Image (cartoon, rainbow, N blue to C red; front, side, top):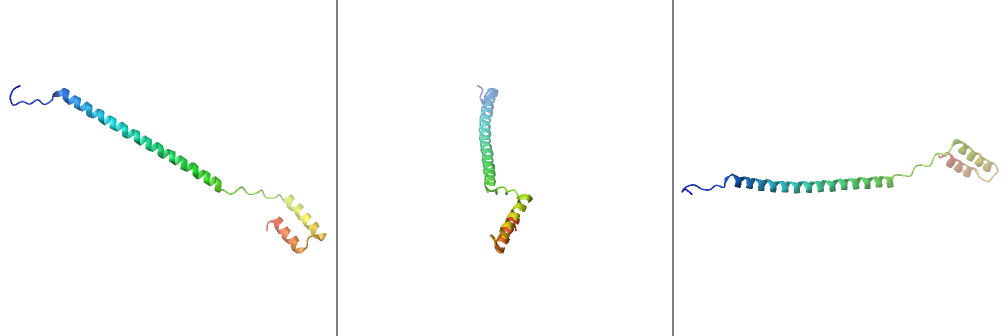
Length: 106
């Protein structure tokens, strides 16, 4: 080798270094992406579980449906029965008024 010239590595050596750096970067990038996907997947599962829990809580807290209102014919029949009991003396005025109030819902 002539004096004063250094060996700098050449094109093959530079290409080898570049390939090693690119391969390492690719592996690291793949790991980061995999971890992010796992994290997002877990967050999605947690959100779904919270939504299901909230729906169950709402269903449990919802009041039962109200009983259907008595039809008008039923109300009239009950009032007639009460009037009959009142006229026959079985119910006094106060009892008749209270029972009538219950039937009419007031």
